[in-house]
Length: 437
Image (cartoon, rainbow, N blue to C red; front, side):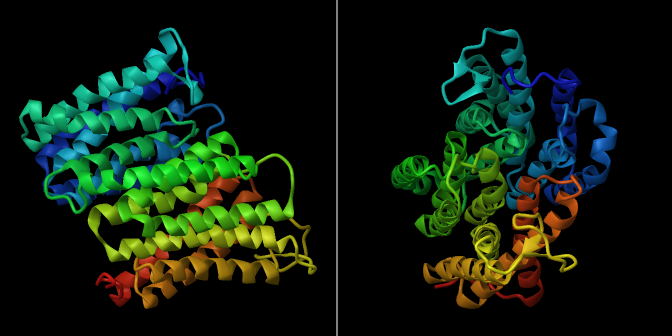
């Protein structure tokens, strides 16, 4: 973590990170399906119990959501990669060890070694990022070699790229949630490099130049238009490149629509300093980026539909909020219908709702037009995206107004809920199992 953010219990927090590696023998002893189930159940148990059991390692002012996400990243990431790659448990083990060892080493180096700051993130140090890589590579290689019965030399070669990627992701200027992004990015690259993967490194590498060029130009335009700040541009570009790399340009188009339309709606309504920061990008685009990654690694048409819904929900919510403020009718609270002041959390207007529904439908229509999903599944994704935006309003009127959740956390849950609706509907109906032609 570099040297930033002194807080009560930080050394103990890093000791807990390293201590999670004591769970690796369980991963070796159990079949992958049982190990995945155990990790998933442990993740669920952390949701209500984590803040109580581990309150001594919570950072000052850290919310329940952010703290739980940090602690649950280890079992959640492990369960995810065991599910995606049941025949390659070394992928889950390697990603787990990269996070546990690398993050702890980065914190130690950032605290006790001289601190020239990174050019792209003044809160992180060069020493911390170097220490992350130096600790993550041997730890990940040893874990992967032991769990996967690999020659140690092969494990080092396999883990070199993922360890470097984990160090770079950890250094990005996104506050909070870096545990999850590190384990997902390093594990995803391991999955790509593994023999027999659905999408290979050559295919991803061929997409990098075009994706990087488009994202660089779009970031420059957004910064000049003051649609987001510098950290928001970096975080948004990092999240937006994921669907392009794993789903191709077809996966990037829905992201581009969200960025363009959402930014345009905000700029039409107001002038002034940019409001879309790295935290805003992570909350709105994080769930969709994760689903794009999973869809690319698995080749699942169902996950592609869930990805569309996770993009449709934040766009619908953004248009509801921004366009709704232009309404001549006074907004009403979604939970009770009483008139409230414009801009109140949970307030809705007919104009905003129409704009939100149109935005969700547009995302789904584009996804269908370029062949990500078939039209019937696109309709489900659009409906789920709009439902997620309504859920955002309900949470805004209840949990956010009461101070239990931040606006970013509400946005994150709304996008995730939209994706889960799609997964539930498609699992019950059986639609969307055959990829579109």
